[in-house]
Length: 385
Image 1 (cartoon, rainbow, N blue to C red):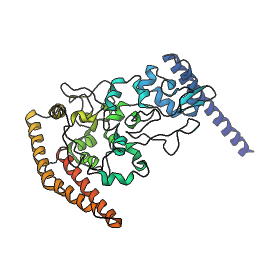
Image 2: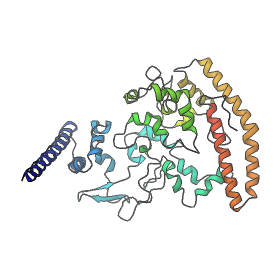
Image 3: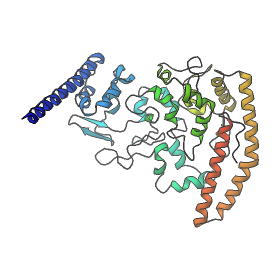
Image 4: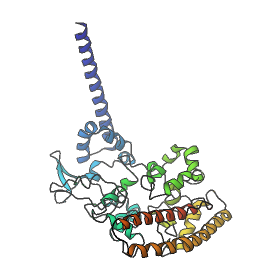
């Protein structure tokens, strides 16, 4: 008898909890709709998604998009004629893949900048790498499956099935160089993931280190062990990164992050950028460390403006002068003869011996990248040969 009463009470409590949960969700949705006056398709979306995907709803409702009245349909609505659209909820056509062209409807300047970046072109650069590039012997190993193994960071070419839905073999994917069904390159979700579209997330090193870390990408390890990285890890006030506005400067943040140096509008005469190359006079990731084809001095000065937020100009000049000097010596004494030697040996080696040689060559390239990037990230004395 007592057990039956307890079961009944438990059932009532669960029922009341469900009613309360549903009421809160419904009230939140209606309140939000009243505040921003969502109309049309986006209002229909909330009818289901406040219940079906509550976490996504919460992210969106607290985002800058939600507060500005940018609804689901503004990003996901499509038309019957598009190959990547399908009829949803027996009401309207939608697209699953939100592309950079979609974001460009509102964020034109940011997208124009991003489209010219190595991030947006990262998959295309793999696909079009020429055989005379020193990295080609390594990269060519991944051509057979269209670089799908590289897709987590470089992206993949997203395909859609006959029903207009993304092929599971190519989706989900948020690689920086993703080729979308509309042939646009890139994914804003690489740095602004989820439905919160947070600036703070893009400003955190952890977001960059999702790709710029690991055996072949030493920049993550270099940053974490640098004074900048240590300051961020031990003293950084993460809440500051939530600060709205166009940029953070040296008065606001004293622990440089990846975004602070490479994208942020900190520094005299600088603007927020979505192309890291605008502060990089030289490609340190490439084994030949080529100079930028145009405005190399201007690009170096852009980076110096960032450094000048915390460091004296004389210190900055000496730092870069010494790094340039050490780089020249390293490239001349180590990289140039090493590249020539490996090229000669690879041309005459086959089978298992070639695979072993390719592994050794890859290690050589990675160590070269590590040394070059270390020079410019704070450790002139750290030599790994």
